[in-house]
Length: 351
Image (cartoon, rainbow, N blue to C red):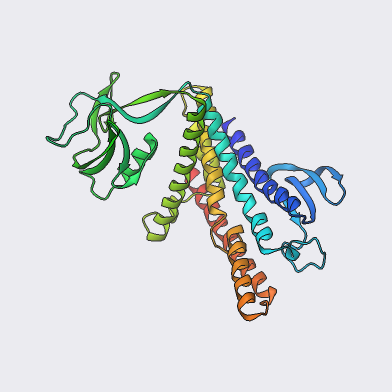
């Protein structure tokens, strides 16, 4: 069941992405030849005034065929005839819709709980070591870990795991309304007993706040920003070599991870919550990744569009559009090759 939900989530997120392009193109007065939900053979088609609306058999995404998106069309309502800002808006809108989708999913999840965890300390576990003179106190609200702002417990754990010195940490807290910097705190994972179970923890008890209308939106925003931060850290790890190709996953690996998260949950309700939370992370992940200035992605089109506009402005001559087409075609081939490699890797891991 969770695998099916995961596949549907991927399909919906791709369709939402294309819907962003569609709505932006329509609002900019650009002709859209076809808008499709799903891929493969057509199940239902309806011709509008100028756009063919279609529903296709496979629920794995969709597409939006915009006039002049990939060629130099002579149609006055083609994308290439519109001002630069309008074209940039159309390209950006897909990623924007993915981010909004991720935010809304988290908003629903947060709304389902009467409470949410905060970074305000409620106390300490038995045996928690305190440092003389500079110590954490119940009531402190942690706002930064080694200079990185944090808003969620997951934020806190992420930066604690990635700190350069595994033995000590600098924490900034709000105490009695004042910002206090606690340097070189000996805060490490160790065994603590909590509710009769022994596990590796930092020895801190965090408080929970009751759900409020504005608090829900604030929490959903913090989670969405946390997702963006995780994506950027992951990209940084790939560039610096901290993460290997074996640690990367494609669609198959992501679907498997979502299914596993659901299957390992103690109840069906928690399983569904975990599946959709990962779905929200993937939505934001798609949003960020698609804006990277890589040929073949929307970010690559945005980058080259700005470069072409700058060259045209400076030289008074527009570069040959075939060059840009070749660049994006090459980028697309490389992306397809990477997807194939990740597919093989994902299948190998599953086997």
